[in-house]
Picture (cartoon, rainbow, N blue to C red):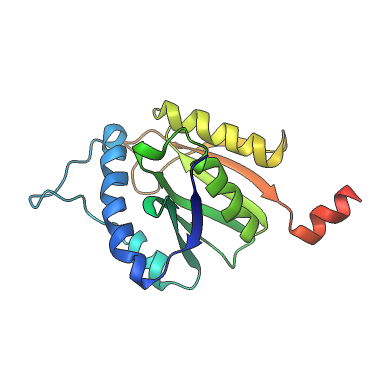
Length: 175
């Protein structure tokens, strides 16, 4: 695996994350049909601002060999169930293990119940998230389809749920 760093993104990282956001939205446009605006960029939906400004959110930057390779936004940090709200790995870094490692490190930093949503039509995401859930939780994960709030015309998202033990709890369960 290439040299990988997964770290909480700071204000200085925001321009890189904003550029990665455009790539993320471009990838999703295959599934939601969204086209760029007149200026050639995809609209932001407020998640980017929340990730960097809301204390209940956490942005993460993934780097490989010192280059930005992806990002993740976690929300509901203070809720019983955290949500991996947004997750993206640049195409050049995919299938290298970076994505799995990033999810493992991020969820380990916030032990407890987790959920992540993706689209059934995104076959690569379906395979990836099922594999991630199995790697993290064995067979102790579940999957369900939920309508997208305010978008009844869209196919429901697939949600995977699993739990991650804290280090102390994990040590107790193995001891």
